[in-house]
Length: 272
Image (cartoon, rainbow, N blue to C red):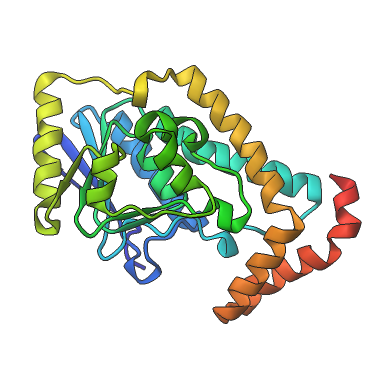
């Protein structure tokens, strides 16, 4: 099995590349663990002064693979597991101690789009798109997007992305509204990202969070959103929708997990 995260370093900058292109670099449990390990390694490496996070073409990341992450268990345990996993995913970015640049090379969906906004900056390829289909899935916003999107882009653009419209800005549109700080031709993405990160290294830049937010504030937002995500994931409309989506994709095993949860919800929901 190829390395899920590719790592390369030059002049104080470490580039981490999510490397599961046949599955659109989606965040399975294995991919999330590999990313956490790679980020921990970069954080503790004295030679690494800044980090670039990108994906193996054509996608940046298709987001969390729910069919590969939700398993049947006691309702309270499952709810607590979803809360803990969602919270830890974004805390991995929030607590990262060094400047980190998201180099979005293609579509970024769901948690991969929101986590990119927790980095020090986003540089987007012209092939990039940013999608947060929470409303369509019946899920509350995550990754601090309930607070940060409006600060970064303004209320109107944030509502378009997070609401029923489900607007998916391109790299150029993301730059125009303030979601991304740079947009460049696809072929120039990594070279420009390296240039920016090396500039941070030379300037002795420290880790920053977006829009003047404090770590304490965003940790609290993330904790609150994580409970909302767990509530959403165990709701009847979401379970029904996931079953139908996965069945349509001929992913029978994961689909049957959601079918079982949906059909038995009137019973097990009493145990929440």
